[in-house]
Image (cartoon, rainbow, N blue to C red; front, side, top):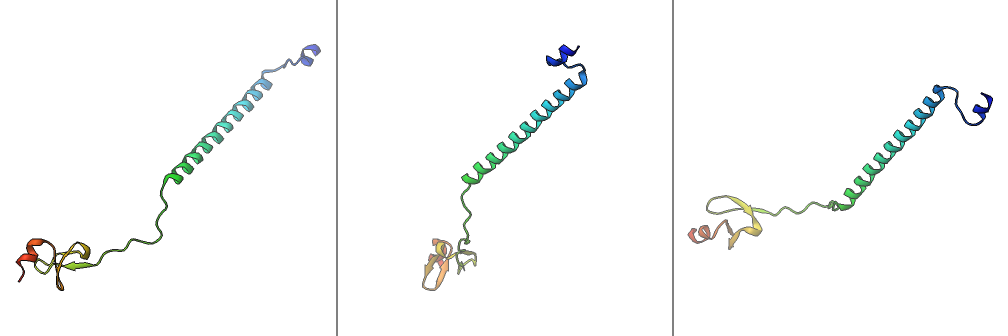
Length: 96
């Protein structure tokens, strides 16, 4: 029996079970670390692809009312005749 212990023979199953549990624990910890690393890599890749947010908001165009129907439209889309604004060519031509 003394020779078997020196040669690396374990006398009980309890020691084998503890070694197996330690190995299993190491595998699980390694797997959890790998999953966390992959999630972090994915997050960084998505962050690089997203365009940076503009710091100043885009200007909202001034709104003007059509002289005929009173519908409000952006000033840059309105048709103008003197100081009057119109939403369509038809309203521009029909206003006297």
